[in-house]
Every structure is written in C-alpha cells, then in structure tokens.
Length: 149
Image (cartoon, rainbow, N blue to C red; front, side, top):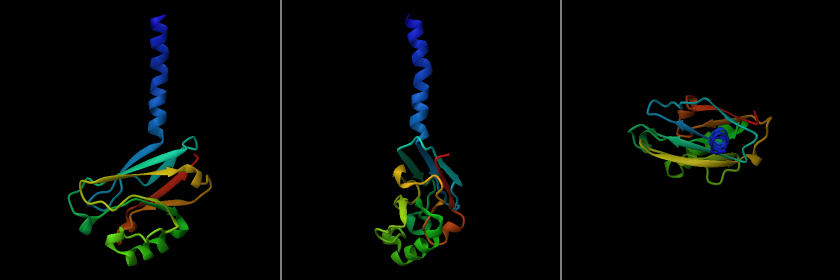
C-alpha cells in the first residue's frame, strides 16, 4: 500500500512542479547588449506568466541599463521614440503608456526584476515583441513572445 502511494506521489508531484515552472521564465540581458532568448512561448494553460530579467553584467544602468518591455510589434518603434524623450529617470519608457503590455524596471549590472503578465490580455494570433528600451539596445535586444502554442 505504501509503495503504491509513493509511486503515485512520485509520478504526480513532478508534473505539478513542471506546471508551475511552465508559467515562468528567466531571461538575461548582458553587458554585450544581448538577451539570452529570442523567443518566449507562453502556454495557453497559464492564467499568469512571470518573466524574470537578470542583468549579470557589472556596468551601471546609466551606461548599460537593461529592461524587458512587451508590446505589439507594430507599437515598438513608437514606444522607443517616446522612451528616449522620457529619459533615464523614467527607464526610457513614457509614463503609463497604454501600448506597453508589461515591463520591468531598468536594471544595472547584478540586478534582477520580475513582471507577471495576466494572459487574458494576450491573443493567440497576436504579434508580440519584447525588447530593451535603453537607447539603441533594441537593435540587438529583442525577440518574439508567442501565446497559446
């Protein structure tokens, strides 16, 4: 009896752990102006999805700051232009910009931050891009977010 119970627990508990991990991801932004991922897939089964940005570099945010910003692809360039005008103090993002779906704060080396998406705001056929809004970083620091696949 105990063996059967242990077997059942052994088979089901890893599934729970996998499910929890399946609704989050880590992404790194380095001093070389690179994200370590160019695609993030958010399963349709996730009600919320957490992205943790880690900046393992050593340079301060004033020199090599990184954030993680999510928007529809069609809005990215306008968000970046408005972000430059907003400046460093605002993390290179216009305050309360409705085009921004989610974002982390601007990080310097050794820092990390997380943001949790309510996936009800995403569409399976949506065209989403994530990027760093620090001036000129988005040329290299960008990728696609896919929902429901």
